[in-house]
Length: 552
View 1: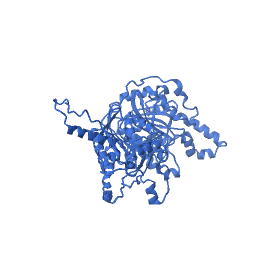
View 2: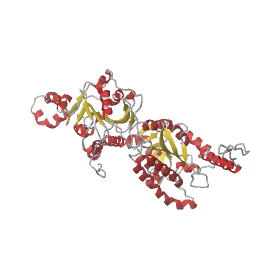
View 3: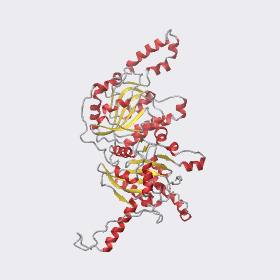
View 4: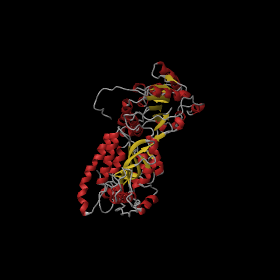
């Protein structure tokens, strides 16, 4: 594990327990056969309540106030907001690496609860206690939680607000430093859990070193703007290692990981927004890979869509439009839970429902770069397709793609390798797959957007579709050089030739050859997809036995 940042919180103060209820003190009787309750038992129960009260005080009033001043909720406030009321069962409240000073819950609150009535496991790092750093006992607690999540096949949720590995420079504790090598088990266990149960790592504060690898291995990583960050080494370590003066926000803030690196999936404004995003995200997922995703009861059913869908696409196929205006017209209640919306904007990935059925959407967006696929877009798509395939969530591809980006910069970025990742993911996916060709479907872009060869359960085209190895402009650019050299008006001749080509790439020509199942009225799209989802509810696909494929 990389070394974390030195905690800025210092030792947590020992809170003075409030006086617990002492009962009536007269012995009395209970419901257990009328046997009297001893004074010793009452004293032990009172002591238990005092210890709980001390732990619930976390780092004390001053540190809690400082947390609130930063615009952050406390770990316990986050858990309360995340889980259904009165469902949290805390585990390890008495755990602590030290006897002095007091370190409530060893800086991480762990337990079981429910979200929308479904069980889950939650670990919330408490920044008011030694900066939420990972201690030996705290890691034992979280390990126990991971074991329960995997064994019982329920989601695992981390609320990360941590300075990383705990570094205690006091002489009596220096011998503990090498023991942190053992905490690497957490990452191996996350890999074991991957694709078995949903894993959410919400960045509600800093996450340095070890706590940065947690989101790196999780399925869904929302970040709170302005208060969250993640980096393999925090600013103090970066300064010591490479001499770079940099803030946590500049190093690994929400803008960095949502716009540049793609390590995060969503940027939200507040802790409350982050908690709601977790609940929304999990509502699309089954408890584990062994189950079907939950269908929402009472969802809008079949309906011929109104004419507004006919007005989204411009008449000129060379003009752009925003695919985000089309998707809400197809899905239930117009709701799309978009993932990585600020990253690789030429491609949209997100979760929605159609007829109550959860569905993952992969859609080209011509508003950005004409919808062309680059290395970042291909990685974004591959990651999302793998996620949906792991948890039995059907996939919908909305296609308007001119192909992959070309040129020397694209090749230097590894476009072949990154494009192959997308192709590999789509080809490997065995969940129900549906393809709607809205407009352009050119070349390898058509393949990776689940073209006919990639086993779509339904593939349909709108009348505006163009399906070809490339567009007429590209064909004339490659093959028309000699022809254009011998004509008096090259531009007029080029336009004439493109008009001759267009009828051969229209959807009816492709439908004649059986390469699409049907050319549909755009207003029928929703009903066609509901039919497909109902048909494929119990879909099974047999693949040749292998240990695993070798992904690009």
